[in-house]
Length: 300
Ligand code: CDT
Image (cartoon, rainbow, N blue to C red; front, side):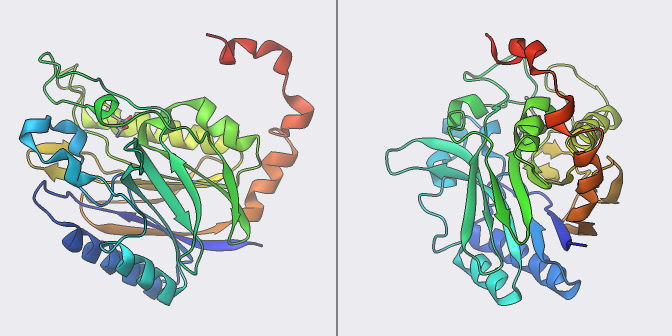
């Protein structure tokens, strides 16, 4: 058995005016709760340090202030210090600005000493570049970020093979399969998913939660891996985000689920050896894949 006690640290809303110090204090409080429960890894949401700012136009918000120029930095160092003190590996998302001024929707993964072992930059950026008057809510991710340039790597961390993706990436089977082909055993991801469809009116929250869960459970099952999917939820300055954070086992079953739209910790004991059966049988890729028929997947 290779058991990692995983904490999914769902976060409630972060208002536009909330500063990093306040957000980091909330994250540390969740980390302390996870430590009490014996967690070895805690996963926080996409863009965990700020409101989901791509909903705002430049003149409505101080967009440049939402980016991080280094990680860790003065604001987040206390989070890294507390994680190290507890001996907990962490993962969280943030808006990255490189020294060259490039901007990515990024997440990092640490080991239990607080050292960053992996960085991922979101590949599938949803939404649009220009303000869209037809939409009830703007989703300007394509304006504020460029697509990730690091692919979908995996890292050996804390005795398991771990990978990351971010929010919309979870809806794409290619995301999961590229990591699955590298033997991934645990995929961690955060999301900010609006509770309403800005182009379809009242689509219904139930359907949106279902599509999120369907994407994650099928990705986990079809690649025989664990998945931790963590929301930023609740009402951010009048813009509702759904909750529904889950931990999923390699059979595709949900083993822990958030009940609220606030700061909430979900926990599960995840045995990485539970991935072995699927990887050695029905999803033994080396034996069963028929790549001669898959060319269209990478063609234009
Ligand atoms: N953050 C993110 O990727 N959200 C998307 C919603 C896109 S709606 C234009 C998601 O797939 O959940």
